[in-house]
Image 1: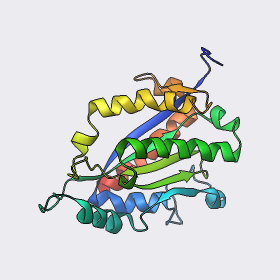
Image 2 (image 1 turned 45 degrees about the vertical axis):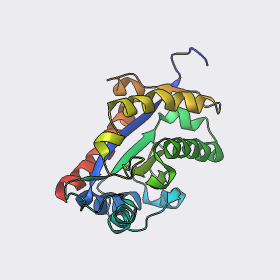
Image 3 (image 1 turned 180 degrees about the vertical axis):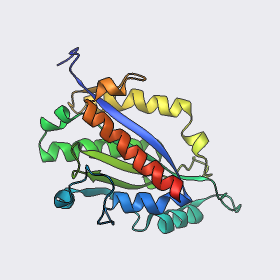
Image 4 (image 1 turned 45 degrees about the horizontal axis):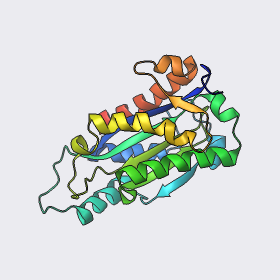
Length: 214
């Protein structure tokens, strides 16, 4: 499919999570609520979801403890600090339909490996794959520690770092024979079908709502 305009595109969106957001996003990712406001979730398929990285049972408690145990400064973490940068990563439905269960899992494992290598394996506190919605996707949370173990989302995920991820991810996946390319700036609606685009937006809105309610 090289050079084919129909090649699927990677969708990688990042959300900033402060302390007050972590309970809500934990409940969402770990499917702790029986009543989901997101109607795309099929509860009968919840058993298909899995964790690729599971270093946190209780998002807020465990992530705050990890930061406290590993930060290089004795200064208290600001109440409004970003504690986790969460990535939601997916592609379009056609891409996944051509893959076996093992290949889908391998796809998300490669993505998790890439982000761990780039931003510190230990800083990746969770990576959850959801297969109970219409398009498979992964939530992956990274504590924004620099090499100096100072917490700074602004520094770790600066504009260049974000640009690098968007550039490097598809090239990295292509090495493993996944036929995928990077999305073009401002073209999410073209990358995905309309229902898929709405689903990704709904997913983000759910998270933002939980963040605002915190």
